Image (cartoon, rainbow, N blue to C red):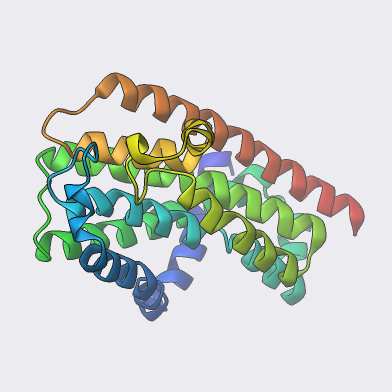
Length: 257
């Protein structure tokens, strides 16, 4: 079988397991729903601050919540790698005539499908709560693409870490260490113009902020497609680098057993 066929069968196996547990997708949406409705109500008057530059905080908040959920959902993929090591499933795949890239590709596609479904649900919840998306379907599609690329970055990082250290505590620690700092060092909740200077500089180099900015401008009435392409290109390069790291980690794991 070629790489495409192997990727298909490995993806099919993962998606079957995913859709057999739809409750997992729903449960993981509880936290972003709380962020959406709690923060949306708590800080709705923040748009009255001079220089904030948005008419509705709910409209402003939704790209941040969608991106934060994409990061959170994909940061745990290393747990799946550890589970497969402990069950012996991964070892059987590694001795079978399956390319390492097919195993990694299947994980990336499963994460992308899960991220898209969850992101769409959050967008719909936001719309039901009264948010407006002047950018229309093209804007939503750009937001989803940014979330998939960002999710691939953190999926690859978590998987590589899981294969390297094989300890759940490390994955949990990595998630806690990265999720909130990267979110608050972005424009997910606060406009860049009102941030301290050092946070603005940190946000400029933060891939989470790149995805938030893509979603925010794409959903606006006047999308900045040049900025979208610039941030999207950065996310694509990072995603390719982390996928390559994952493949290398599989090879490193195989040599260690």
